[in-house]
Image (cartoon, rainbow over all chains, first blue to last red; front, side):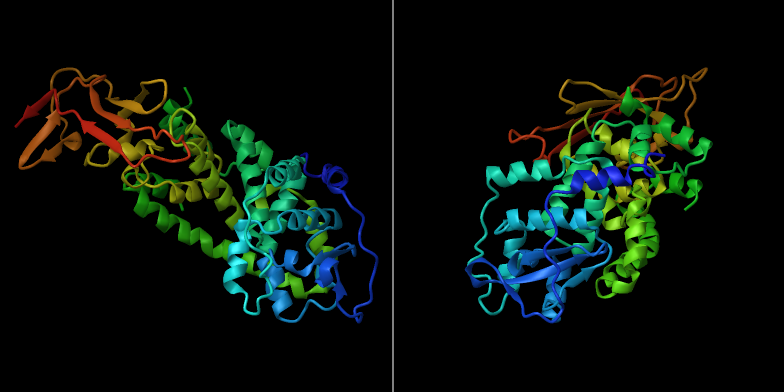
Amino acid sequence: MSSGDSGPSSSKQLVQQPAAAGRSPNQPPLLGAGGRKVIVLKSGDEEEFEVDLLDAMQSRTLRRAIEDGCGDGPMPLPNLTGPVLAKVVELFRRHRGDPRWADELQETEKEGMFKDYAPQKPTAEVKGFDREFVSVDRDALFDLLRAANFLEAPGLLDVTCDAAADAVMNMTVEEVREYFGLVNDYTPEEEAALRKQHEWAFQ
Amino acid sequence: MSFKGIIHDMREEIGSISRKGFEVKLGSYGIRSRAHRGAIHDGQSAAAAVDALKQSCWANMPLEILRDVLMRIEDSESTWPLRKNVVACAGVCRSWRDITRDIVKTPEVSGKLTFPISLKQGMKNVKIEDLEVAISNFLGTKFIVYDGMPPHAGAMVTKSRSYRLGSKQVSPRVPAGNYPVAHIAYELNVLGSRYASNSVTIIFFLHAVDLS
């Protein structure tokens, strides 16, 4: 199985930026460029990342936590590793104003908080970043998919799910099983029947 | 669901079957997904959760993600032969099959042909195994469906493969073998494959029939 030995290599591929300096939970909220609030996200392996509050709001999960008042101290995200979170934070920054989530924010915001966040069409630069973002090995891509699902971030979901779909294209059934590490749970008889039924599709 | 159940279901219209099969599966996956989301407030399970992430195989991927990925594959190619990707996904394992069948709509709704079962609509009592499909043109927009039954000795009317037209019962003459049963054509949209056409023409041939 390749899944057992490829964990460390995927981590290496993901590392892009160092963690933010450690902060105590009782410090007042950080202010980023333009006086905007910054929150701190803490990965399962204790790495901390500063994120513009409005960028973090791309994640519905984080938005709910912030609205519940969890945004003042480092916010623990135990099921995300540091390298994964580093990539995600960078994507949130690059997707600022992305219509895939900005529309939703415009509808839900109440206090004019997001008035500077008018939706913009993704630029060529953002599209290039997205392509680069998913140019990772299989395990790293799966980690990003899980992160996207956990964070419920539409832009992140879009980019990662597209990459997974592209990976499957033009694979045979066997190749798909191998790539995804899936067990064939059909009996030989069932599979033979299915194959017979669909063989015309693969001639 | 047993395989017999699947085969049985496939003989019915695809839209209704797939919803049945899918909801059964959804229950078990949904619980996992909700538990997953609760983790944000629970710092203690950090180490265990990170360990779980390291075994990076697809098997424990949330169902929502699998569904999203399969929908993208389904959406990407509306014409043959590229649409075989969708059929391949359905052959991977049971959960993939259930979701794929749920996503794939009937030709009338989607304007796309995917499974041979799609061809059955309008032909009551025709076993899907009896049909062969020939992909006829380069663009994959036109199909001819042949009767795939092996030729019988002598001319006999097979009751199980007859269908009704108005009040008259019409049966294919045997030996059948390679009679075209239907022509299927769907229009390509000039904007490209991502914009599926709504127009599917299915013409059933009733030549070579006995009127009895």
